Length: 167
Length: 164
Image (tube, rainbow over all chains, first blue to last red; front, top):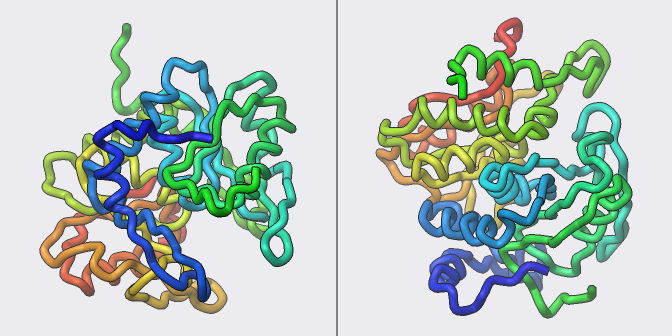
Protein backbone atom coordinates (compact mmCIF):
# COMPACT_ATOMS: atom_id res chain seq x y z
CA UNK A 1 0.00 0.00 0.00
CA UNK A 2 1.21 3.47 -0.77
CA UNK A 3 2.14 5.72 2.14
CA UNK A 4 3.54 9.24 2.10
CA UNK A 5 6.86 9.80 3.83
CA UNK A 6 5.78 11.60 7.00
CA UNK A 7 8.54 14.22 6.94
CA UNK A 8 7.72 15.63 3.49
CA UNK A 9 6.49 19.22 4.01
CA UNK A 10 3.99 18.89 1.18
CA UNK A 11 1.97 16.35 3.14
CA UNK A 12 0.57 18.90 5.57
CA UNK A 13 -0.57 21.20 2.76
CA UNK A 14 -2.40 18.25 1.22
CA UNK A 15 -3.89 16.89 4.43
CA UNK A 16 -5.34 20.24 5.49
CA UNK A 17 -7.14 20.60 2.15
CA UNK A 18 -9.17 17.43 2.53
CA UNK A 19 -12.48 18.08 4.23
CA UNK A 20 -14.53 15.82 6.43
CA UNK A 21 -18.26 15.69 5.74
CA UNK A 22 -20.16 13.97 8.55
CA UNK A 23 -23.03 11.54 7.94
CA UNK A 24 -22.37 11.06 4.22
CA UNK A 25 -23.46 8.98 2.34
CA UNK A 26 -25.35 7.81 5.43
CA UNK A 27 -25.56 8.34 9.18
CA UNK A 28 -22.42 7.43 11.07
CA UNK A 29 -20.00 7.75 8.16
CA UNK A 30 -17.46 10.60 8.22
CA UNK A 31 -16.75 11.12 4.53
CA UNK A 32 -13.30 12.34 3.50
CA UNK A 33 -13.84 14.70 0.58
CA UNK A 34 -10.95 15.36 -1.82
CA UNK A 35 -12.81 17.94 -3.90
CA UNK A 36 -11.48 20.75 -1.69
CA UNK A 37 -7.96 19.54 -2.47
CA UNK A 38 -8.75 19.90 -6.19
CA UNK A 39 -9.70 23.54 -5.61
CA UNK A 40 -6.10 24.33 -4.59
CA UNK A 41 -3.92 24.04 -7.71
CA UNK A 42 -0.67 23.95 -5.73
CA UNK A 43 -1.83 21.26 -3.31
CA UNK A 44 -3.32 19.17 -6.15
CA UNK A 45 -0.04 19.46 -8.05
CA UNK A 46 1.94 18.49 -4.93
CA UNK A 47 -0.23 15.37 -4.58
CA UNK A 48 0.45 14.30 -8.16
CA UNK A 49 4.16 15.16 -7.91
CA UNK A 50 4.58 12.98 -4.83
CA UNK A 51 3.05 10.00 -6.62
CA UNK A 52 5.13 10.66 -9.74
CA UNK A 53 8.35 10.81 -7.74
CA UNK A 54 7.51 7.50 -6.16
CA UNK A 55 6.61 5.72 -9.40
CA UNK A 56 8.73 7.15 -12.21
CA UNK A 57 11.67 5.02 -13.39
CA UNK A 58 10.01 1.83 -12.12
CA UNK A 59 9.04 0.54 -15.54
CA UNK A 60 5.35 1.04 -14.88
CA UNK A 61 3.46 1.03 -18.16
CA UNK A 62 -0.12 0.90 -16.85
CA UNK A 63 -1.98 3.21 -14.49
CA UNK A 64 -5.45 1.83 -13.76
CA UNK A 65 -7.93 4.26 -12.20
CA UNK A 66 -11.10 3.28 -10.38
CA UNK A 67 -14.26 5.11 -11.41
CA UNK A 68 -14.81 7.92 -10.71
CA UNK A 69 -12.35 9.63 -8.34
CA UNK A 70 -9.51 7.43 -9.55
CA UNK A 71 -10.10 9.11 -12.94
CA UNK A 72 -9.05 12.42 -11.39
CA UNK A 73 -5.69 11.29 -9.94
CA UNK A 74 -4.74 8.49 -12.33
CA UNK A 75 -4.39 10.31 -15.68
CA UNK A 76 -2.03 13.06 -14.45
CA UNK A 77 0.21 10.36 -12.95
CA UNK A 78 0.04 8.29 -16.15
CA UNK A 79 0.90 11.28 -18.32
CA UNK A 80 3.87 12.23 -16.14
CA UNK A 81 5.39 8.73 -16.08
CA UNK A 82 4.60 7.92 -19.73
CA UNK A 83 2.19 5.08 -18.93
CA UNK A 84 -1.18 4.28 -20.45
CA UNK A 85 -4.32 5.04 -18.46
CA UNK A 86 -6.86 2.23 -18.06
CA UNK A 87 -10.27 3.12 -16.61
CA UNK A 88 -11.86 0.50 -14.35
CA UNK A 89 -15.60 1.01 -14.44
CA UNK A 90 -18.97 0.04 -13.07
CA UNK A 91 -20.88 -2.45 -15.24
CA UNK A 92 -22.04 -1.53 -18.73
CA UNK A 93 -20.14 1.75 -18.96
CA UNK A 94 -17.25 0.47 -21.08
CA UNK A 95 -18.20 -0.22 -24.70
CA UNK A 96 -16.93 -3.34 -26.45
CA UNK A 97 -15.49 -6.43 -24.81
CA UNK A 98 -14.70 -6.41 -21.11
CA UNK A 99 -13.65 -8.69 -18.29
CA UNK A 100 -15.57 -8.36 -14.99
CA UNK A 101 -14.77 -8.98 -11.37
CA UNK A 102 -17.45 -9.18 -8.73
CA UNK A 103 -16.71 -7.99 -5.21
CA UNK A 104 -18.62 -7.79 -1.93
CA UNK A 105 -20.02 -4.63 -0.39
CA UNK A 106 -21.21 -4.11 3.16
CA UNK A 107 -24.63 -5.14 1.86
CA UNK A 108 -24.66 -7.08 -1.41
CA UNK A 109 -22.10 -7.00 -4.18
CA UNK A 110 -20.87 -4.88 -7.09
CA UNK A 111 -18.82 -5.41 -10.20
CA UNK A 112 -15.77 -3.75 -11.76
CA UNK A 113 -14.96 -4.03 -15.48
CA UNK A 114 -11.86 -3.54 -17.62
CA UNK A 115 -11.49 -3.57 -21.39
CA UNK A 116 -10.21 -6.77 -22.94
CA UNK A 117 -6.81 -6.08 -24.48
CA UNK A 118 -6.13 -2.88 -22.53
CA UNK A 119 -3.31 -4.56 -20.66
CA UNK A 120 -0.68 -7.02 -21.91
CA UNK A 121 0.82 -9.97 -20.07
CA UNK A 122 3.94 -8.93 -18.16
CA UNK A 123 3.16 -5.22 -17.87
CA UNK A 124 3.76 -3.49 -14.51
CA UNK A 125 0.74 -1.62 -13.21
CA UNK A 126 -0.46 0.79 -10.54
CA UNK A 127 -4.02 1.00 -9.28
CA UNK A 128 -5.17 4.51 -8.31
CA UNK A 129 -8.12 5.63 -6.19
CA UNK A 130 -8.71 8.58 -3.88
CA UNK A 131 -9.20 6.47 -0.76
CA UNK A 132 -8.70 2.95 0.55
CA UNK A 133 -11.19 1.77 3.17
CA UNK A 134 -11.68 -2.01 3.36
CA UNK A 135 -9.71 -2.48 0.16
CA UNK A 136 -12.51 -4.45 -1.50
CA UNK A 137 -12.62 -2.31 -4.64
CA UNK A 138 -8.82 -2.27 -4.91
CA UNK A 139 -8.71 -6.06 -4.61
CA UNK A 140 -11.22 -6.37 -7.43
CA UNK A 141 -9.06 -4.02 -9.50
CA UNK A 142 -5.92 -6.02 -8.74
CA UNK A 143 -7.68 -9.23 -9.69
CA UNK A 144 -8.70 -7.80 -13.05
CA UNK A 145 -5.16 -6.72 -13.84
CA UNK A 146 -3.62 -9.99 -12.65
CA UNK A 147 -6.12 -12.01 -14.68
CA UNK A 148 -4.88 -10.11 -17.73
CA UNK A 149 -1.33 -11.08 -16.79
CA UNK A 150 -0.11 -7.76 -15.42
CA UNK A 151 1.93 -7.36 -12.26
CA UNK A 152 0.42 -4.87 -9.82
CA UNK A 153 3.36 -2.99 -8.31
CA UNK A 154 1.31 -0.96 -5.83
CA UNK A 155 -2.06 0.61 -5.07
CA UNK A 156 -1.76 4.38 -4.88
CA UNK A 157 -4.36 6.15 -2.75
CA UNK A 158 -4.37 9.71 -1.44
CA UNK A 159 -6.13 8.68 1.80
CA UNK A 160 -6.02 5.55 3.89
CA UNK A 161 -8.54 4.64 6.61
CA UNK A 162 -6.56 2.42 8.97
CA UNK A 163 -9.62 1.70 11.12
CA UNK A 164 -11.14 -0.28 8.25
CA UNK A 165 -7.97 -2.19 7.44
CA UNK A 166 -8.72 -5.74 6.46
CA UNK A 167 -6.00 -6.77 4.07
CA UNK B 1 13.77 14.58 -34.44
CA UNK B 2 11.29 15.69 -37.07
CA UNK B 3 8.87 18.25 -35.70
CA UNK B 4 5.26 17.25 -35.81
CA UNK B 5 2.66 19.79 -36.72
CA UNK B 6 -0.74 20.20 -35.12
CA UNK B 7 -2.51 18.65 -38.11
CA UNK B 8 -0.44 15.46 -37.76
CA UNK B 9 -1.18 15.32 -34.04
CA UNK B 10 -4.90 15.71 -34.61
CA UNK B 11 -4.84 13.07 -37.29
CA UNK B 12 -3.08 10.66 -34.95
CA UNK B 13 -5.48 11.39 -32.08
CA UNK B 14 -8.42 10.83 -34.38
CA UNK B 15 -7.03 7.53 -35.60
CA UNK B 16 -6.74 6.06 -32.10
CA UNK B 17 -10.32 6.79 -31.11
CA UNK B 18 -12.36 3.70 -31.85
CA UNK B 19 -15.97 3.46 -32.94
CA UNK B 20 -18.16 0.81 -31.33
CA UNK B 21 -21.39 0.20 -33.23
CA UNK B 22 -24.71 -0.27 -31.46
CA UNK B 23 -23.54 0.93 -28.05
CA UNK B 24 -25.21 1.69 -25.68
CA UNK B 25 -28.10 0.68 -27.93
CA UNK B 26 -28.74 -0.30 -31.58
CA UNK B 27 -28.14 2.46 -34.10
CA UNK B 28 -25.65 4.42 -32.02
CA UNK B 29 -22.01 4.54 -33.19
CA UNK B 30 -20.17 5.10 -29.90
CA UNK B 31 -16.93 7.10 -30.01
CA UNK B 32 -14.64 5.37 -27.51
CA UNK B 33 -11.74 7.44 -26.18
CA UNK B 34 -10.35 4.63 -24.03
CA UNK B 35 -8.08 3.52 -26.90
CA UNK B 36 -6.64 7.04 -27.00
CA UNK B 37 -5.77 6.69 -23.30
CA UNK B 38 -3.78 3.54 -24.14
CA UNK B 39 -1.42 5.61 -26.32
CA UNK B 40 0.63 7.82 -23.96
CA UNK B 41 1.92 10.09 -26.72
CA UNK B 42 -1.49 10.64 -28.31
CA UNK B 43 -3.09 11.23 -24.90
CA UNK B 44 -0.37 13.74 -24.01
CA UNK B 45 -0.77 15.49 -27.37
CA UNK B 46 -4.52 15.83 -26.83
CA UNK B 47 -3.93 17.48 -23.46
CA UNK B 48 -1.16 19.71 -24.85
CA UNK B 49 -3.45 20.95 -27.62
CA UNK B 50 -6.02 22.05 -25.05
CA UNK B 51 -3.34 23.61 -22.81
CA UNK B 52 -1.95 25.62 -25.72
CA UNK B 53 -5.41 26.94 -26.41
CA UNK B 54 -6.27 27.87 -22.81
CA UNK B 55 -3.08 28.91 -21.05
CA UNK B 56 -2.48 32.65 -20.54
CA UNK B 57 -6.20 33.37 -20.75
CA UNK B 58 -6.74 33.94 -17.05
CA UNK B 59 -8.81 30.79 -16.67
CA UNK B 60 -8.97 29.79 -13.02
CA UNK B 61 -11.62 27.04 -13.22
CA UNK B 62 -11.69 23.80 -15.19
CA UNK B 63 -15.04 22.06 -14.68
CA UNK B 64 -15.15 18.41 -15.73
CA UNK B 65 -18.30 16.41 -16.39
CA UNK B 66 -18.53 12.99 -14.75
CA UNK B 67 -16.98 10.65 -15.65
CA UNK B 68 -14.92 11.05 -18.84
CA UNK B 69 -14.53 14.79 -18.21
CA UNK B 70 -12.63 13.70 -15.08
CA UNK B 71 -9.98 12.11 -17.30
CA UNK B 72 -9.25 15.14 -19.50
CA UNK B 73 -10.07 18.02 -17.12
CA UNK B 74 -7.51 17.54 -14.32
CA UNK B 75 -4.41 17.34 -16.56
CA UNK B 76 -5.52 20.55 -18.28
CA UNK B 77 -6.22 22.22 -14.92
CA UNK B 78 -2.82 21.21 -13.54
CA UNK B 79 -1.00 22.50 -16.61
CA UNK B 80 -2.72 25.92 -16.64
CA UNK B 81 -2.73 26.35 -12.84
CA UNK B 82 -6.51 26.30 -12.48
CA UNK B 83 -8.67 24.51 -9.94
CA UNK B 84 -10.59 21.42 -11.00
CA UNK B 85 -14.32 21.29 -10.25
CA UNK B 86 -16.16 17.99 -10.76
CA UNK B 87 -19.73 18.23 -12.11
CA UNK B 88 -21.52 15.11 -10.92
CA UNK B 89 -24.63 12.96 -11.06
CA UNK B 90 -26.98 13.45 -8.11
CA UNK B 91 -26.02 12.23 -4.67
CA UNK B 92 -22.30 11.81 -5.38
CA UNK B 93 -20.93 15.12 -4.06
CA UNK B 94 -20.93 15.36 -0.25
CA UNK B 95 -22.01 18.58 1.44
CA UNK B 96 -24.00 21.48 0.01
CA UNK B 97 -24.60 21.47 -3.75
CA UNK B 98 -26.54 23.36 -6.37
CA UNK B 99 -28.31 21.37 -9.05
CA UNK B 100 -29.58 21.70 -12.60
CA UNK B 101 -32.11 19.45 -14.27
CA UNK B 102 -31.60 18.77 -17.97
CA UNK B 103 -33.41 16.78 -20.67
CA UNK B 104 -32.31 13.40 -22.01
CA UNK B 105 -33.57 11.69 -25.14
CA UNK B 106 -36.09 9.96 -22.88
CA UNK B 107 -36.63 11.64 -19.52
CA UNK B 108 -34.36 13.91 -17.51
CA UNK B 109 -31.20 13.88 -15.45
CA UNK B 110 -29.65 16.14 -12.83
CA UNK B 111 -26.17 17.62 -12.57
CA UNK B 112 -24.68 18.91 -9.31
CA UNK B 113 -21.83 21.23 -8.36
CA UNK B 114 -20.48 22.06 -4.90
CA UNK B 115 -21.56 25.32 -3.30
CA UNK B 116 -18.49 27.54 -2.93
CA UNK B 117 -16.34 25.69 -5.45
CA UNK B 118 -16.26 28.73 -7.71
CA UNK B 119 -16.51 32.49 -7.14
CA UNK B 120 -18.34 35.16 -9.10
CA UNK B 121 -16.06 36.69 -11.69
CA UNK B 122 -13.92 33.64 -12.26
CA UNK B 123 -13.30 32.46 -15.82
CA UNK B 124 -13.97 28.80 -16.60
CA UNK B 125 -13.83 26.12 -19.24
CA UNK B 126 -16.08 23.04 -19.19
CA UNK B 127 -14.48 19.75 -20.27
CA UNK B 128 -16.02 16.53 -21.55
CA UNK B 129 -14.84 13.88 -23.98
CA UNK B 130 -17.63 14.41 -26.48
CA UNK B 131 -20.37 16.89 -27.39
CA UNK B 132 -23.54 15.47 -28.92
CA UNK B 133 -26.72 17.52 -28.41
CA UNK B 134 -24.92 19.76 -25.92
CA UNK B 135 -27.57 19.16 -23.24
CA UNK B 136 -25.07 18.08 -20.58
CA UNK B 137 -22.71 20.94 -21.38
CA UNK B 138 -25.62 23.38 -21.26
CA UNK B 139 -26.48 22.15 -17.73
CA UNK B 140 -22.86 22.66 -16.63
CA UNK B 141 -22.78 26.11 -18.19
CA UNK B 142 -26.02 27.05 -16.43
CA UNK B 143 -24.68 25.93 -13.06
CA UNK B 144 -21.49 27.96 -13.46
CA UNK B 145 -23.23 31.05 -14.81
CA UNK B 146 -25.83 30.93 -12.02
CA UNK B 147 -23.06 31.75 -9.55
CA UNK B 148 -21.48 34.47 -11.65
CA UNK B 149 -18.74 32.56 -13.46
CA UNK B 150 -17.89 33.44 -17.06
CA UNK B 151 -17.64 30.30 -19.18
CA UNK B 152 -14.99 31.04 -21.80
CA UNK B 153 -15.44 27.82 -23.80
CA UNK B 154 -16.50 24.20 -23.69
CA UNK B 155 -13.56 21.93 -24.46
CA UNK B 156 -14.45 18.58 -26.00
CA UNK B 157 -12.23 16.15 -27.80
CA UNK B 158 -14.98 14.98 -30.15
CA UNK B 159 -17.92 16.76 -31.72
CA UNK B 160 -20.88 15.04 -33.38
CA UNK B 161 -22.06 17.72 -35.79
CA UNK B 162 -25.12 15.81 -36.93
CA UNK B 163 -26.68 16.12 -33.47
CA UNK B 164 -26.18 19.89 -33.15
